[in-house]
Length: 538
Image 1: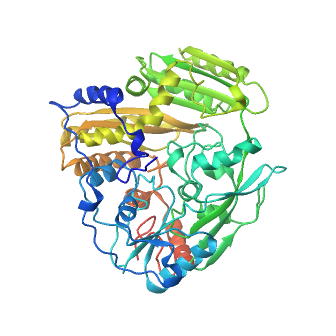
Image 2: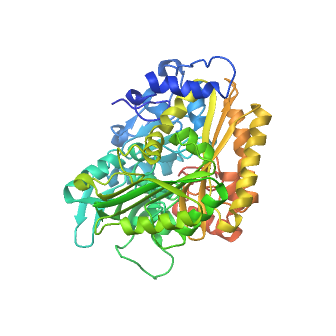
Image 3: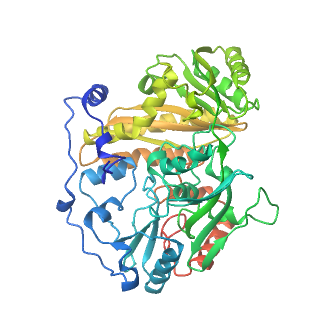
């Protein structure tokens, strides 16, 4: 398979044929006339500037100045990244791409870059949607992107404690492939699973498929090793500790600004044996939200509890509902889970929900895929799962045809959700009207907690080729203001990067910002690590 340099995933998996035809039919509902395809440029035509730095002889074998390498590491995979790539707009590219073979190489690379003042961008799978891997800064003699793809092994398994020592550069499928012979799984499946790495998940505090309980990668971490310019931090393996502030918490979510994560001991699980799932239709959105809250506060802890509003259900699950569609799933390696599903469905019926597509039993072969409904059951849940996996590819296809298709997410407490939802939806509609004349806003819950949901919004609008980045930036700024004003977080699981910095700066407490700045100075005195992310570039 060939990775796309300009967009999501593999070239061979791009939208085409009947899928493309159906997608363009939907696009025609948003924009007048026939959508025009804009093919990505050849890398040779980009005219990338010559590298400004040369690696010392001892590191030269790790470093690449190949234009294809540099272009593929210039941006993440957000809508604005894809559009700029399609337009050949690569204003900021790394000078070199380094691929260390082991932790010693990482130490040597950081030592060299610290001496020379060269910026370093740690790189996992490059799936950032917030400008987290883009060298968008000035004042440095050069930039080296450190791609950890060679550090891709499960090094050790502790079956007794049910934990595994794993290198940070391993991609999701390769990680699960190595755990599978032991009957184990990490059970962390973000939408980017196929094209993201353990190190990236840790550095961005990624959210997985678990809708409750183990929602973030944080919950699965036992200990970490992190290379900083000031030494290697290696925390102790412990099931829990009250010994002061957690060293792992310091680096989780640090987004490559404090060090390069090289490996971690992770809590793994037995592969699920029992599964149960259903879809629940609601005629009223408020009732659907109330039912979801009841389940979140029940202690049932479903693996999936994803509420789609009417627009999201129609667009991506093919379900025509008046209020919403709730996709439920439970799983266990130890015991049947039908009783838990039945209790959740009782709570839904109490709020006017109508269950359908109920499945329950032993998972075939105990394979345990993503728990969004029983595979092959033909339900709305299965339709949703199929659409969910294809969304990034479809987003790219729409971008090629000048359609704005992007998402943003947040989290808030239940008491604030109604006001936040109204404000964000109105802000999105108003901003789309101002720059495109029309558009559609959708909402789903990706995760739910006893004290609040994590709403995930989708925006679909006609774009103007050559202006789509500014159009999206206008919409993004408007919804981000609404989120911040109404008590939401600027991100639940997409990270801060460079794109969310203005609102993150307002969200975090002042004393914490001062402490983070001091920590950055102590661990990275030359300020070389991912300048401009989380903190102002020095």
